[in-house]
Length: 406
Image (cartoon, rainbow, N blue to C red; front, top):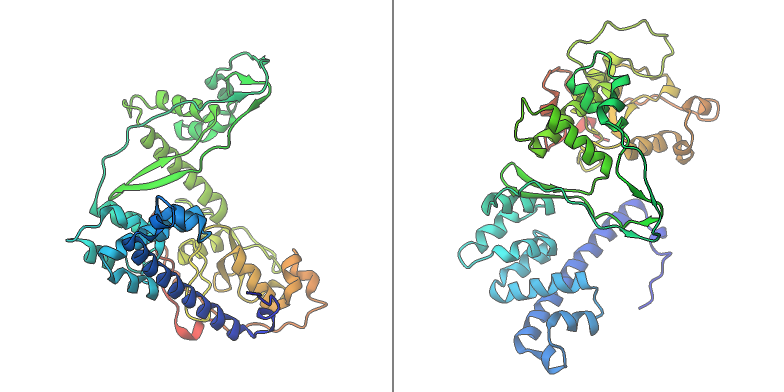
């Protein structure tokens, strides 16, 4: 089947969105139909007659599916033989193949209907948390082990060991233990390093729910990080005799996040009096940053045409509702949080596509005929000291009235 790649470019925006939705629906229905047929093929053991010892091998060889595709469809086909309603859930999009794969080891005749209903509409992370509530597992034991290193040379570089405390001492001054933990990155590793070592690529970090409010977290760290962890354990022995790594990391992250929020959003328990600013200032003041952060809960508050709020927390930027180039002021009413993607998108809508590649909007004032926006979206300005609760909230800002949606 030949696909004309130019057809999508001929569609209007609404037509393109509708066509993408239709194709996704057709794909779900086709996948569900394939799974239903695979279930029947498996029941008749036709893959064995064709010379394949497993349905998985048949799917990868004859149907030319990837290993991942074959495994998910094989699992779904076997479940469909025991619980046919899963086909309707897949076709409607209530559950996807990843959800079926995650639920498969836990399904029984007694719980399958209730479990599928609870998992309906959830993403992978939410399904994992659901399973952690239904089937809690014990905590994992703390473990630190050195990964093997394949050396390409017998030559070894050796260096004098450096005392972590001595390395930190010049910069400590009058700082407390929290500052010492935050300054730990300044320590140089004392480990012997091969001159020409080929280190395997580190495994991806894993965050896996075990039980309600309990997670297994694994990642690969370098020697310096392990050294800092051991130093933190020793310094906290009086307060934390066990030296539990999870508690050390939690305390360190609490200090680090407070510093990050203070640096980026000027959130502090003792704000200083604001300085006098020029009338044409573009950068929001500390007071404005603080108020906007607390009002928007540290999330992008862009609302799409269908009323969906973005809610992203990464790559956050301060967005002028009325652009600075059009006379917009850096006030609480005119500043909102946007992720980088939506900040760039709104700049493109207002100024045109070229705006995304221009860092100074003032340079466009002479080239763009701009008119101030009349649609404002100001949320609540209620302040709260418990900004951690706002950060931890899974949901973004409250939905905005329809008249304020773009």
